Length: 228
Length: 254
Image (cartoon, rainbow over all chains, first blue to last red):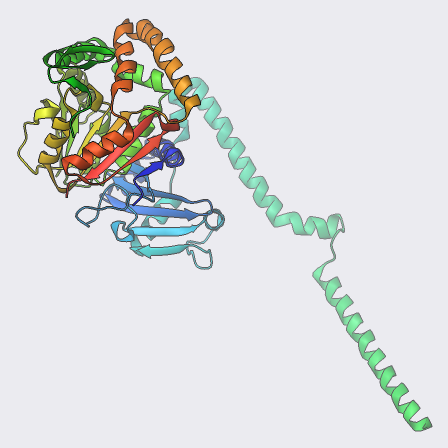
């Protein structure tokens, strides 16, 4: 049996978990509605196991906030074999387990729909719990103005928050505009890509030429056959 | 196994100094009375804050759950107790034990100020003679405390007694790095920089010189693992952190 491990790599994951925990709880302080919704989960545990790179974290939702802990691969002993609050490797110890590669998680995060079908992510355990967490995550509304105001004072804070809010709204508006109008600008204004109708007409012309060529070939065959 | 920190039956080490066995506890107590007020800030500065991550890892492998009873020996200013308290919840209990009244007072005040109360008890107790019934705790932790205990074998046996069967012991402690380069750097830091920092921040160079010396006199990681096995623990193993200057020993009571 292995009795010793150099755990500096695992320590990095613990540090990441600590940072995540601190950041999430700090952000939730500015969104009491989400905080209350998560507190209702009453110590439910969600394990997120990432492959490529390997990273496993356990999120426990408590009335005091979210606990984020690293799941360490070589600590599998669970004395009484029942659900624990400290992370273990046993899937049964969690209310839900989400497994996938980093790429899968990034793709799923960017998807607009709730379903994780065809995302490459595997889900086990209480799917309803996971769906509730997902729903809450989508409605997070952090009061950034409050956070900024506390850091730099009410006057400057309000001004900065308003400027950021305006910039974010403009950025969203612009990106939606670009997304909706990019195609027509490329087609109608810059004439860089053909319209669908032009492509269809071109394809019809090609088909027509092909049919005429086939007909000519058949006539040639018939003529040569008659000469013999 | 006989505790290797005893050179003769009536003397033991206090850092590099040989003192009478019965004197060690009071000498160690003097050190911690002296540093108690600045203990947390010194820990942060000395370790660059990494001690928090060592402790977090310890919690993560503890296996502690809601409703458990946890004993945090030499709990000092309550870093582990705070986290354990959150995990065990209202139905569990954490006992913060420390032989030193000053450290216990600092820890108690700090935890109460942070709203950690209700499931935490504070007890002034000697790790060698734990004042609890047999098979009481699901988990026992001792972070950076074992090297200050006079008779470590006695303390380990005492911990084994009060742990429930299947319960886990966690010993987080400084150790000697194997890498000669790390060892040399670590020695220079411990004996030259640490006492100066102790003088500047806690106005106490001697206590931090003792800290460095006591780490060198503490049993090495394999010896400590052997002591756990000899005491009757099973599945003992250790994790090494930060170039091998800190070890977390874990063991299960059969």
